[in-house]
Length: 177
Image (cartoon, rainbow, N blue to C red; front, side, top):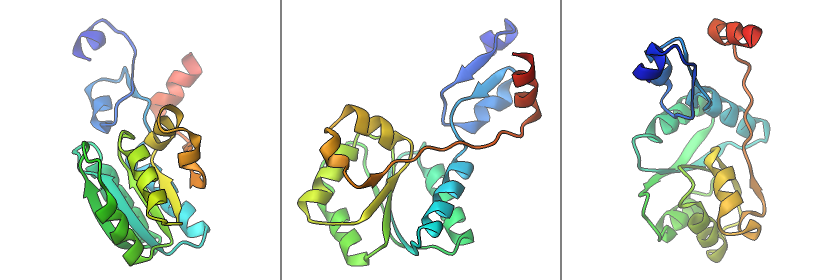
């Protein structure tokens, strides 16, 4: 980024870390803010009548801020997180977590991660006979499109977020280009 900034080049970064835009006025992040994404997720859950949420997430420094954002949003919206467990990126057996979800009896499961585990999670949910509403972050779309086939994802709600941008730098960029 410093080299591109010195050259006066606009940089569009597919980056999860929102602080990347602080490095230069010429850096734009193409990834939704975790705060916005999880506020929308929580409000959607509430609008669907969900009250109890199971939260299953990748134990990774890049995902933990998203988990925190959902915790904040769910508190604001009056949702109860009745089950919460991390999973490891290389984990291939999530039956213990799935049994914990079954025991907690949530209305919906939110899965947050990078997508590599999603086919395994979906397959094991089906194998264990757990019938529940499922939501995920944007990685769910990427995973479903490339792994495991569509049958694994029947009944899963796919996220698609669009947030109005109020940043004056973005407005200036839109006007200019």
